[in-house]
Image 1 (cartoon, rainbow, N blue to C red):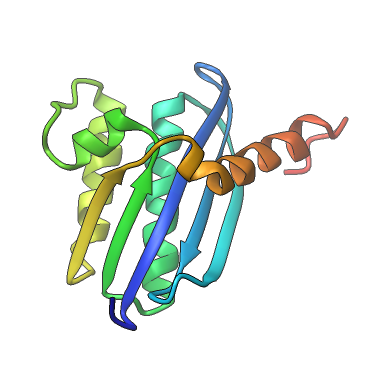
Image 2: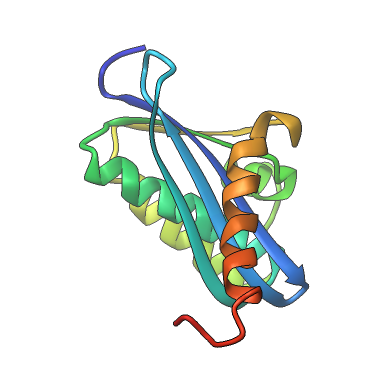
Length: 143
């Protein structure tokens, strides 16, 4: 791995589908050290929309860090395979989000998408659910 590489674990969570949703993103450097994390409440979205938005958040973070080689790991087989071009995208909103991901990916030398097990993606899942817990456990809208 090079200094320009970042490994990003992403996860989207939705309570209800659609429902209240959030993203979690964990970033690792080329030496396997954590370099950042994102826990962000989105509002109403489907689980797949949240998954795509998590990828977008990860790409934005990689860009901000000046990385050129990005490996996105996610436990959503559907989104990983759609971004790899193996599955067609029938839903219009997911088509729009995939297009936004593809446009963002053009800013990098290399972007790869990998499907991983849920257990390998536990920190990103925790971050997404923490954002939901923060929002849903507050009696007033924090936004």
